[in-house]
Structures are given as C-alpha cells and as structure tokens.
Image (cartoon, rainbow, N blue to C red; front, side, top):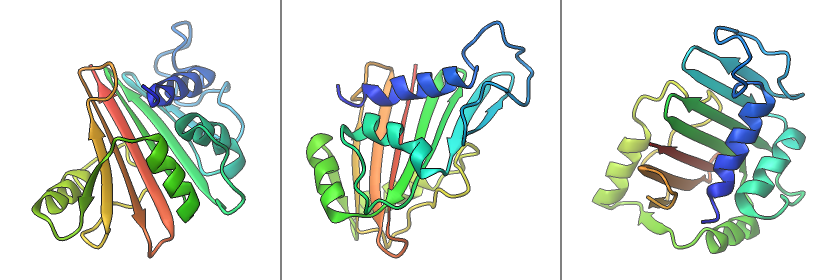
Length: 181
C-alpha cells in the first residue's frame, strides 16, 4: 500500500517536532525541536506540524507521490495532525497537468466523482463539514470543482480515506488523507 508513506511522514514530522517523545512535557505549547520552517503545536491529546514553505514541503511531496515536484509546482503547503487515535494530512500545491496525471496513475485505483451528480454533491458536503484541524490556507471544495478523486479503506487501519481535487480558479491541487483506529 503506497500511501503508507503518508503515515510514516506524519510520524517522522511529528517525531521531529518532539510530539512522539514521551519524555517531553505533555502540556508544552511551543517545542524547540520543531524543524526549520515548520509551525508545531502540541496539546494534551493532539499535535500538529505545518509549513507553507515549498522547500520544507518537498520531502513530504516525494513521500506522498514517489517523485520530486517539477519547477512548475511553485507552491507546496503541508499540515500533519494527530489527535488521540486519528491522523490527518493536508497538502496543497500548484496545479500542473503532467503532475496530476502522474499522481492519478501512481495512486490508482481511485473513484472519480464528477460534478453534477448526487454523489459529487454529497462528497462536497462531507468535505465541508466543520474541521478544526483544517489549515486556513486549505480551501474547502465547492460544487464548481469538476472532479474529486477518492478512495477509502486502503490502509491497514479501522478506517482510511483519500481525497484529491483541482481548484482551477485557484490553480491548485488539494489532497487530504486521514485514518483512525
């Protein structure tokens, strides 16, 4: 299962922020072990690591998709979060048609949910549910999004899901992956 790397990335990023070190103070608001160009936060039952720095996000892009982003990918933003038994991953990056084709090929099989269908409307509503962990830069999908690519239960957890869509107005590709036990 190729997307297992996202989980590893989440664990590595959170670990490098000191979140998985049981010797750290659990109530710490700021962590001096946070990697450069990352904003790390830790609560009693949750932790997150976030960056809008393209260079700092390149390793995550490579882990997710198996190749380096081309120079046409001008922006990459990333947030990993963990709360109790749930983990989430948000990524957004500049739209490039060749990059999208490579991702769709690599991550197949994906269910294609096209606009104008009941399933599309329901998926947009689901993705727009309140999510306190969603970063401010991660735009919610709308009914104007042409296609949402989706799969679920592809990881070795009680539940996992993957959503990918292109916002052509913003010229950005959005990815969210989550799982829980």
